Length: 95
Image (cartoon, rainbow, N blue to C red):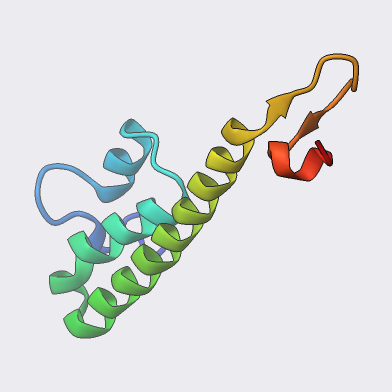
């Protein structure tokens, strides 16, 4: 077994973590959360890997909140006929 291609901690159980990440189409941050949690008890320093998972999870939550806020801002934008563009709210139009 190769230390690069299939180290021991990658192959505990019937399913490799990378197969789960790819099958579920996870992104970088949420994929790393899953990776560190699932491999933690097999690598040697379980607490450190769980802390890494928490770090990625907090960062992912922050990014998702920011994206959600941007989406909400875009949804509150209104179309002004004749203006040719969107504005954020009625108060910004000067009306």
